[in-house]
Amino acid sequence: MKQNVGNIDRIIRIVAAAIFAYLYFGDIVTGTLGIVLVALAVVFTATAALGFCPLYLPFKLSTKK
Image (tube, rainbow, N blue to C red; front, side, top):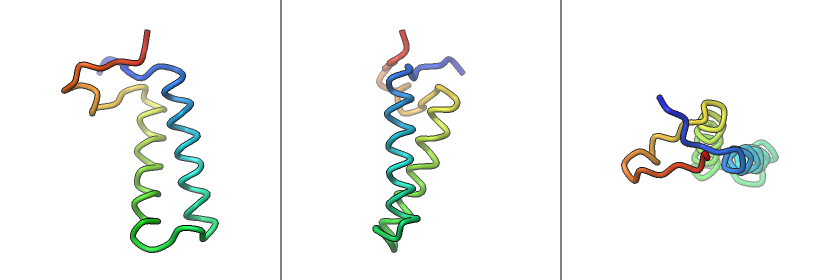
C-alpha cells in the first residue's frame, strides 16, 4: 500500500473530520445525516492516519510529493 495522501491533504481531512464530529456530538446535525457525517469523519481520520486513499487509485491521483 503506497501512500498517496500528502500533508496538506491530511490536515484538511483531519479538520473536516473534527468539524463533522463536532456537528454530530454537539447535536447540531442529527438523524441519518448525522450518522453519515460520523461515518465520513471515521473514513477521513483513517485515510489521514494511513496516508492512503483508495479512491485515488482508479484515477491515479496522488497529493504526496
